[in-house]
Length: 475
Image (cartoon, rainbow, N blue to C red):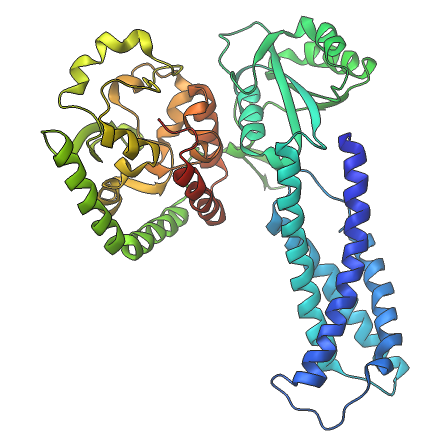
């Protein structure tokens, strides 16, 4: 099923389900007001049949206000909270019009309390329905159902910004088959899940090989306007839906803020970081969750320490120098999962490295102990880092703190991930973990920094649980 057909189906289903839920909310409001009599008792009870006309009128009013407010016009990129907020205004206006109708018509059965309860239940039911719909659509998209095949022509920061958004937001419904570059700089804007397929001159051949391709994203630097115009015309002639990502002087759009100075439009640049208020909120969340989990973590840590000591000689804890926020070095603590002096054998194992970029990872690392393999698979070797979080060196959610020798190999754009504290878990850990390439990990880390919110942190923490329990992508 094509994305366009899927969109029409979802819109039709949403309209019908909203009408059903509005009526269900009205009926439940009657039960609460007249049968259960929550909060305020009633003097006389009107039968439900007396409110049928008002129920029909409310349906017609809400259908009108919802359609005028484009509630049923689904926009790509909207979060669940955006959809919920979009329900507030048309619902409030609809109920206000309904109250005006009852005031003018003076029906025999008239209850403002019923309308108040109806408002609350309509908002609650429709919000829940949108959450359930997003869960269903997420599952369908992951199975390739209803997705829109897309191709990227990108270079530099515009291309990286687009790729990190598509990697972080599978709910957008795009299945990106790959990207083409302009051949201007090193091929470093994507790989793995979004592979490099050649240069923009290969566009016609790529479209011919992929008849299901529907969308073309163009994200080229500002100095390539002529090539962008040419690609727009070429994409349209090939029957593609062309979308152009503007380049703000090689900056991410999330770094650009617009304002007015005496009527003159001004663009200002902000740093890629979490603001001070956000840092305070993150710190409070860290301390609260660490305090809640302190006792069970201590008990589990005691058992892990015994298992490590029983299997092999050496210390229980492993202290390793890592690079934190703004390049500041600190000692990160882990449970020892390898034999003693494992770092001395690293040079001999470089040929077995399975990771891309500066990262060193081996799926079946011969230095791991039996206990260490279990700890790595379940990410239990990371538990002592809760102490790092208490000290303020780390946070629960953020980019993983890198080694100094890894940072030495970073390209300039990679260093943006060092603008915040390192985390115990992060966006790329719930998007594929070690199955991602290093560039993809960095793209997701930067996306997280640019789009940080408390809701995003909570979502990542909750999504980390099944990844830890089932050991997906961990080694």
